[in-house]
Length: 295
Ligand SMILES: [Zn+2]
Ligand SMILES: [Zn+2]
Image 1 (tube, rainbow, N blue to C red):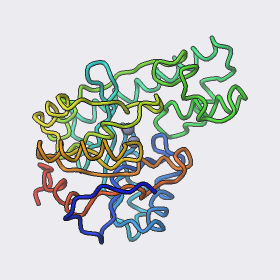
Image 2: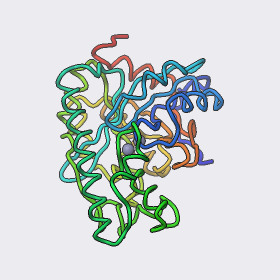
Image 3: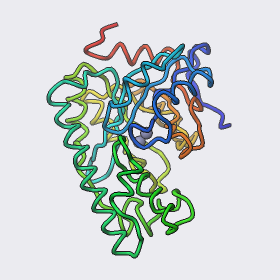
Image 4: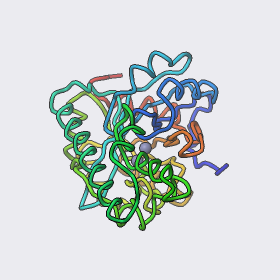
C-alpha cells in the first residue's frame, strides 16, 4: 500500500472515507452493500458520493449499522472547457435551485448515453440503448454501463477496455460531451443549500478514464477557494505522493480542508473502500464550514 502523507496532528482513531460510489450511480454495489463493506473495513464514517444524485442515501442510511453515513454527492462540472468534479456534503437536496440543476444534469446523461450508443453503432459495435438502460437499471446512466454492454456484446474483452481513445474515453471516437455545471455556480448552489464542497481529485492521473481527472491549476483552485470552496481532496488513490505534498501546501496556503477518500466503485475499482481516509480533525473542520450545520 502507498505510504500516506499525513498532517502531524491527525488523530489515528477515526477512519472516514469521504468519497464512495454505489449502484445509484456507476458503482457496482447497492448502497446497503456499500455500508456493510464499510463496517467490515472498520470505517467509522462513509460519505456516499454518487454522481449527480442522492438516490442511494435512504437505502444506505437504513443499512448504516455502526457506520456513520455522511450524505454527499459528486457534481459534474466544467471549467475552462474541461471536466471537473466537486464533492458536496450535508446540503439539502430539495433546495429548489440545486434540485433543478440535478434534474437537468441527469436528463442530459440519458441524451448523452443514447448519443454514444449511436456512435458505437456507427463504428460497428452491436450495442442497443435498451441493453444499456437495462444494465443501468435505477442508476444514473453513465459510461460504465455502456462499457459493460460493449463487453457483453463481445466488442471488447472487459469493460475497462472501453475507456480508451478507440471507444468512450474523453475525446474517444464514440465519446459525447455533456452538460455540466460551472463550478463557481455549483459551489454557490451547495452553500445556498446549507452544504460544503471539496474539489475532487484535482491532480489525478490523466489516463482518460471516467473523466474529471486532470491537472486543475493552482490559479484555478485559488479562484474556487475565493468562491467558497471548503476543501481539497488530497488523499486519492490516483494522486502521487508528490502531488499530495503540493496539494497539502496549497490547501494550507488557501485555508482549505485536506480530505481523503477511496473513490471506490465496487468491482470496477477492485473494492478499495477505506484505502484513503480523512483525518478526524479535517472531518470536523469540514463540517464546521457548512452554513446549514454550524458546529
Ligand atoms: Zn470524480
Ligand atoms: Zn468519484
